[in-house]
Length: 90
Image (cartoon, rainbow, N blue to C red; front, side):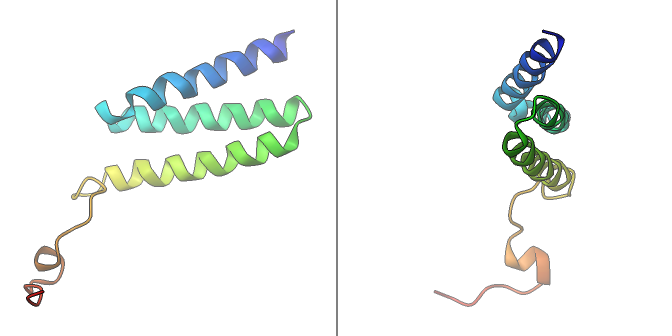
């Protein structure tokens, strides 16, 4: 019963933080934490494929968190800002 409650809480954390993550990069970190907790739940419950998939989502969320911390906020940087050159005409 305790493991089921742990799973419900971790997946609920994922759901709420995913829905709100555009408000703050800290919510992206909370989403990554929820993914990690869900991964642990998957392994504890004996459903290792779920645990593996959630571990991958943890890495994806951490990458998004780090990208959001960059000066560009994770958005592509225009060529002229990145290299100092203007792009060729299309």
